Length: 228
Length: 255
Image (cartoon, rainbow over all chains, first blue to last red; front, side, top):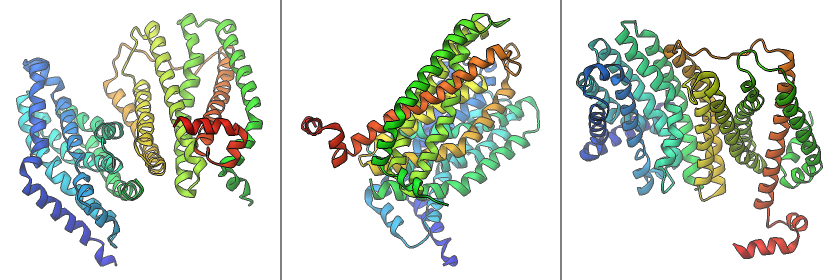
C-alpha cells in the first residue's frame, strides 16, 4: 500500500499538465490577465515613476492574487462535469496524493508563469531594482500557498452552478496573510533590509498549507460532490 | 462518565421542550442587565477626561466586539460537533449563529466608526483591530453564503461546517499577520486608545453590559434555533401538536 501512495500524485500531475498543454489558450489566461490588469494601473493612477514606485510591489501582488483566484475556479470544474472527479473519489488510492498532484500542476501552470513574468512588470512599474529579487522569491513561494488555498475554495464550490462569487468570498480572507508577508518582502527589499524573515514566514505558511490543505480538500470533495 | 445528557441534546424535540422553560429567564436577564448597564453607563458613569461623552459608545462597542469573536468560535465548535457526532441540532446552532455573529460584527464596526470620528478624526482607520474585525465579518458572510448555496441541507451543513473550521485555523494566523502588518505601516499620528487603566466607575457598567450581551446572544441564538427546529421538523407529529394542525396545513398549502 505504501508503495502506491505516490502513484496518484504523478499520474494526476502529468495528466493536468498535459491537459494544460493541449488547451494552451486557456492555460495562458492567468498570465494575460496579470499583464493586462497591471497595465491599467499606470493609466488609472499616474504614469509618473515617483508615484508608481511606492505601490508597484503591492499592485503586482494584488494582481497575481486575482489572477490565481480567477484560474482556481476551473481547477475541479471540468473534472466534475465529465465525471472524472467521481472516478478519482472512488479510486482505492489515497485521495490526498491525486489532489496534491492537481494543485502542483495548477501552480506550475499559473503561479510559476506569473512569477517569471513579474520582474518585467516590476521594471515597467518602476519598482526599485533592489526589490526585484524579493518580489520574485516571494511570488514563487506565495503563489504556491495561493494555489493550495484556492483549491480549497474550488473544492467547496465545485458542485454549484454559480460558484465564482462564492469562491471569492471564501478564499480572499484566507489569502490575507500571504499577501501581507509577500508584499512586505518587496518592501523590505526597497528599504534595503534583509528580507529573510518574511520569506521564512511565507515558507511556514506554505509548509502548513501543503500539509493541511490537501487533507481538507479531500474531505470537502467527498462531502460536496457525493451528497450535493 | 454519563454521556446521556449529551446524546439527549441531539434530539431537536428534547432541546425545544427544555429551552421553552429557559426562555423567560434569559429574556428577563437580558432585559434587566441591558437596561441597567445602559442607564448606568450612559447616565451615571463619569465622563472621560479626554474624550468627554463620546467614550460612552464603548458600552455598545466592546460587548458587541466580544460576542462577535466568541460567536465565531461557538459557531465553529457547533460545526465540528455536527461533523464528528452527526448531530442535526448542532448544525442548526451553527447555521443560526452565523447571522447573529455577522450582525454583532457589523455593530462593532459601525459603533467603532461612529466612535472613530470624534477621537481619531475619521470614520475609518486601517488599524489592526478594525481590519481584523472586517475580515471576521467576511468570514461570517462566507459561512452564511456557503450554507445557503447548496440544494441539499446536508451538503450545505457540512460544507459550511468545514469552512467554519478552516476559518478557525486561520483566525490566529490572520490576526497575527494583520497585527504585524499594522506595526510595519503604523502611522505615527494616530495614538490608539488602549484602556488598561479604566476607572472602576466606568468599568463596572461595562461589565454589566458584557454580561447583558452574553445573555442577549444566548436569547437570540435560542430563539432562532427554536424557529429553525420548527421549520425543519415541521412534518413531525410533535411540532404539529405544538403549532397546531391548521397552521402547519396552511404553511404547506402556501408552499
